[in-house]
Length: 501
Image (cartoon, rainbow, N blue to C red; front, side, top):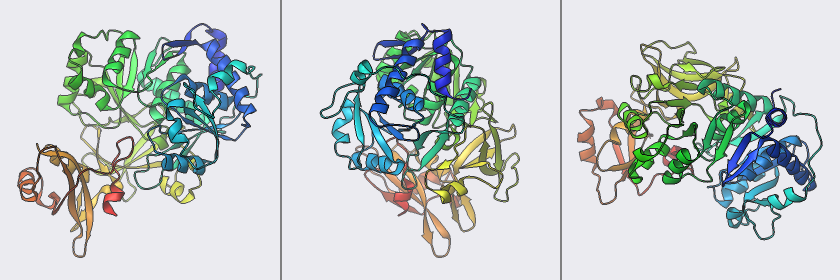
């Protein structure tokens, strides 16, 4: 059994009354959820959906997203989760590129949906939208789908789109087997159990909240609580009020409440077993601050990417202070990891190389992009992450840059992240990106693109003086460009290719 349709049906048989999902104050038992997903399958079939068809999901964290996803899977259809923060042209590209036939859209997003040019069948969820059938009404009228053959392990389950930091988003192809292993390996790495109450506060269309934590929790027979959209105080209210035992977020999800919620320490987080974060490492001071503020030292960092399931490495709580800034030294259970130099040989302590991953959760490739797929894997099937990491004397990995962002100036390698990290400590700097500009003699010159804090002014000479005692001379930018804002995706990832253009 390596598919989630079978998982849900098994839980519905053996623990029918156990809470499966909670959203907007409504609780769904495993038996109720299984039946609703069968009704969703019937409703989607009536809209013309069958095996192999693509069903897009443009939603906040709602029950409709999850019910529609399982309904599609029961039909052998493929789901295409879409970032609900995107604008109409971006949504249009994903719908067209994926070949989506139907899109389940949150009623609150109907105005954006109506500006999309690609022709799809629209079905609203959570709230009504003019001209669209409402999923919840369709479920009431639909008969539950009879038993169908479970999806095959190698059948396509989802197309997850990257954030497009190097151009147009790429569609990562994940089979039911990939998704199953992404969930079971994440569950093993963090000790999820059938007693878990997991808060899904980050957008469920993201690969980690979806495949690792929502599906990881359901795989183990636990309960998943959906927070419609993250905000600092509602996040804390849900953690305490729902007696949550596990949650995942970007570091800012845990740091933001400390700045805007005055009484964080008054919340009862005694049910919390573990706090997981990903998207960037934490320094020692921040790790200590979180432990003190939340009354827990059970913070675990996970590293991965959409292409890998996402699965990668893990930094356990007992390592968080001593190895602050590291992504860990071992893969999540089920994941093999190697750091290799440009010559393809494994790196040793003190060396920098590219992180390579291999696991049953890694994508099969990019949709309709054989060139990018070929470039993403080596000759032996290892996924090339494009992340450069340094190995310390204890084997822990510290990311120094993206391979494509490394600058070669006068034969010296400059890791843009290292320079960005130093510049970001300047009291007048709000945001910064470091890139290489072509140079006829040096190959590239290091260039800093900066955003000043409100009411502050930046000066190139002053910045250069600030860096002299902190960085080797060849790492100090020769060029300084000042802008109002840096180009970023809807999820905050920097679009360096636009700065280099």
